[in-house]
Amino acid sequence: MSSPKLLIFDCDSTLSSIEGIDELGRARGAETFARIEAMTNDAMNGKLPVEAVFGRRLEIIQPEQKDIAAIGQLYIETVEPTAREALAAARAAGWTPMILSGGFRPVIRPLADFLGIERVEAVDLFFDAQGRYTGFDESYPTTRSGGKPEMVNRLRAELKPTKIVMVGDGVSDLETKPVVDLFVGFGRYVAREKVKRESAMFITSLAELAKVLP
Image: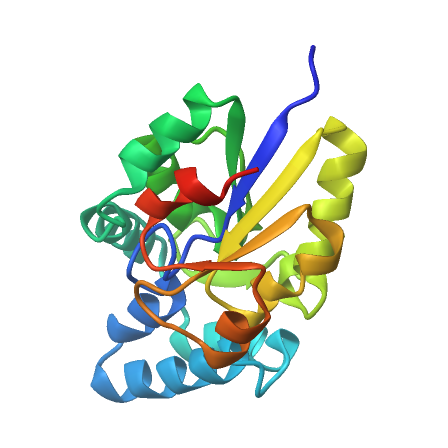
């Protein structure tokens, strides 16, 4: 098998306009949504480390298995409008798209299927037989700061890619800049100052990817 060129996407506020964790919070009412959204923003802007909010948000929400399918469908309904065409063009140019997220694998999977993306690297959630939340995969790297570059290095070791490009909106995505060939900041939904300032390239539509891919 030839070595791939990896095009790795963050999911939330990049491939879709929503933040999945915030939507899980919204399902618990306006007050919970506001609390969760504020915590997410602090983490994504780099004001708090990811690990300071990751488990806490889930404890507050106590998501149920039935919420997962609803948010999965919402990801598809709020997909970045140029994503499918951009991915088709990238594949035609020899790139293999993947998702690397601090979100939740079962919630993201429907969007990945919709976009034809096989591999999703994200956090697993656990439920009991009644569909009640029992925890998350606490060992998974993207539950903490520095987790995304760790995963990029794992992927590099496993797949031996010739190039790696990362696309994302958050500070956790920006952390991958030293370990990828190109970091592309994304600002259609949220243009974070630190990401905009420190990205090698900054785009506001996935349609612009074709111009910046090496």
